[in-house]
Image (cartoon, rainbow, N blue to C red; front, side, top):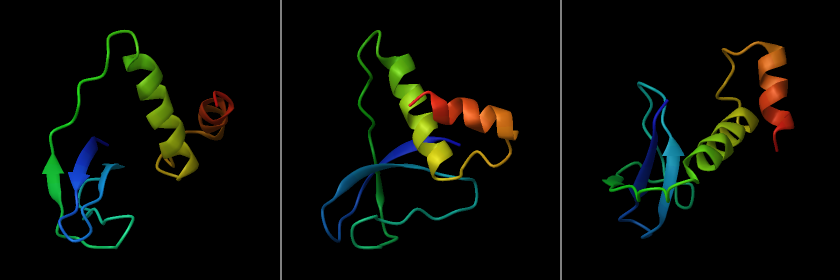
Length: 80
């Protein structure tokens, strides 16, 4: 599941979203679906692993890792 940066022309919000295949992302601020994919910033050296784990924990909290076993999900959630 890729993580994309988006810009909402309706409310001018900028945000990132984990996108599942076949889903249409919506703006978390106004609910618009006409979003523009923005260029993602490059992560600073040495911080990429921390950023990746932070994004995985957020996805786990939101239920995006339902294909993982209970033990794997609990392990991810304990890394908070």
